[in-house]
Image (cartoon, rainbow, N blue to C red; front, side, top):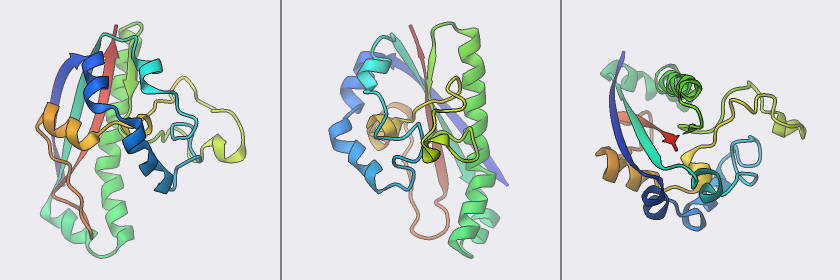
Length: 183
């Protein structure tokens, strides 16, 4: 069983971009990711954050802390595959639910936009791999990482959340970080 804690903070978009978006520093990390150039939400075909997001006035940062129970963490130590299964059944579910809520909110707030927690997972296999255009462009959202944001600094400074990593198994918790932008 897992539990969640939600934290939200609003700030001016320009301040957010100026203090936390450093594509030259962070985007190269994407080169080592298996999704690089394999998903439409991942580099290299991602617009610059300032171009896509700079026209908005306010960013509402949403951090969902997914806390794992002792049983989940113990099960995740069995193998990397077991850890992935536990993460998918908890953090993965939360991440998808967060995106659905924000996409629905976009329908209610004209001119708004969402930055997703992690890469796009709208299709089982992204059409980019097959050299085709996105099948669901109305649902495609880029992630903080794709734009080159300092996730660690942003989560810590603005939401009071430390991002944790585990060499084996699962950390005590994972954080799904998303943003909702309004004009």
